[in-house]
Image 1 (tube, rainbow, N blue to C red):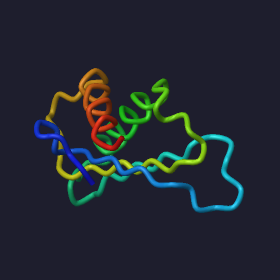
Image 2: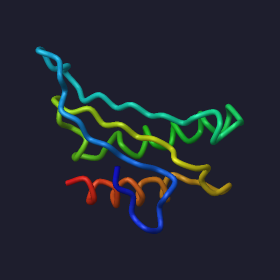
Image 3: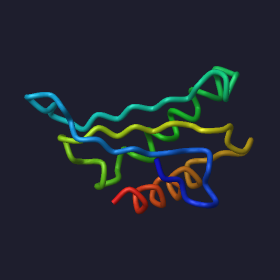
Length: 96
C-alpha cells in the first residue's frame, strides 16, 4: 500500500481477480472503518465521494481487477469531490 506524501488518509491497492470467470465490470471495494470515522454520515459521504471520483476514470475500467480503497485516518472536515479526484489520480500514479 503506497501513499503519496500529502495524502495520507486514503490508500489504494490493485489486485488481479482470482475468480475463473471475471465479472462484467471492475470490482471496487471501499473500507471506511468505524474506529477511524465514527459518524455514519461522514463514512457514507466519504464512500460516495470515492465512488463518484472513480466512476468516470478510465484507469478503473479493467474488469479483471479488484480495486481496494481503505481510509487510513479521518480526512479533513471540508472534503469535496475535487479533493478526492486529485487524490485518486495521485494514488493511481503510485500503483502503476
